[in-house]
Length: 210
Image (cartoon, rainbow, N blue to C red; front, side):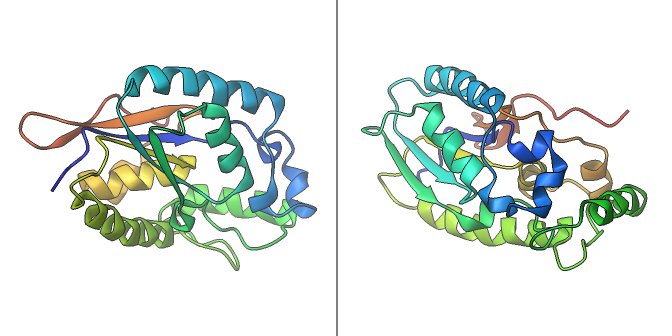
């Protein structure tokens, strides 16, 4: 099995929904675009990641949401060295179609009290549902690792909650540990690095709730 040397998870750049939550009443979550700040964040992340990967080939998996596809394009990966696949299981936690902002605000407060892992949004998903999606994606990922020509670098362009849940599943963190962590900022990334003991470690921790 050709296990990659590193698995990099990057959160999309700032989107319209990050600066104006009322837009969820008019525009589907999957159709929200990057802001100008989000575009700049994506370009900056791309400069760092291209330096990290160097000339080595990369396998990229991208959430189908528009802001993630825009983020990937702005990363500026070399198409001659990068294989890219759209991966729906890396999408954002589903909150359920067009949303009533006041209702979502109320549910966010309820989620903070109930717990981000188990709380399920009305007509949407819980963190536990997203965790199950991660597990299904792992099956595909490990099958792909078996290919003899699999690249040494993996890039996932995804969402903040998904990044935490991916690491929770990979490192077998408890629900309590997951709940203590916060999402990375827009355009931030984390890397799982393969060590000499054939085990992965996280290059830097997630911030913790204060």
